Length: 416
Image (cartoon, rainbow, N blue to C red):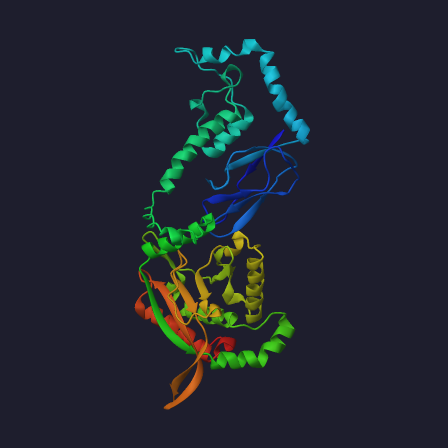
């Protein structure tokens, strides 16, 4: 008995995945729940485990190919490797022992011949229903023209091949000019991973779709730094999480989003969707690319709960253990280029969101305070927003509210 291997549900807004690599080859024995292959999506890389023990009898999709949710990846044959190979070896003998069965198939395809009324095999009927294939239009290869599972698979493949070119209709960039021979010897060419290609495509799509604009401000971080220095030890001792800056920024952004709901909304066709919940995405850089896990219902969480959630996401991101569910449903994103030393940047929107806040490096600068020049730890803030839904007045007001909250962090604690 064969068990099918299919693409699992990929999650909200994820419509396709790319086969990263297969860990097993056809004919190899597999254990139940053993990792079989790696799938790459635009959000995360995940492993597909074996649904049953047996032998990997067939791989229907190769490395580098694109598949959708529910697509057939391969099959596992029950039993040991020797048992699985046995029927395959005996199949030619069985065919040779029944020479009379061969002429029956051509007879059914002769002009004017009546179409068989033999019902399709159950596995073929199930596969046809799942993929929207009309079995009446398929010539069966079974006895008396019965439609078998292999016939349906053969009908599905041309459809998948026809859809693939449609996805690739985006303009192909012109090839780069060849390097001089002396330079070419010192170059290294590495193919982009599918995940990196998808990230690049989505970022470019965001630029092409949204009327993106960035507004800037700066915040005096003296109050936040003093608060952190005073309470970080007791905070970590009580809550088991470090008191960082990100939790305070999340709190400040949630307060500003409540006042300026357009920054927390999105455009859906000709409708504006305002979201009365606050799922804040935190951009995290990993070796495989940028990922954005989401702190859900951040308005309902304490500062300690936010910091604990962010710390957990950071560890799982570094270990490659983030799930698609961890990165779904964000309404606004915060990215911190300051940890890499960035002084100023214009972040790109995380579509379909309408706003993203960029944090930057804290740097001491001379500023005028009550008519006197003082040295203060200053940070530039950048808000990129979709001008189709967010007006300039709203964007500037949002950024001013974040600045005001951070420069008087007591307001964050009192929620005023």
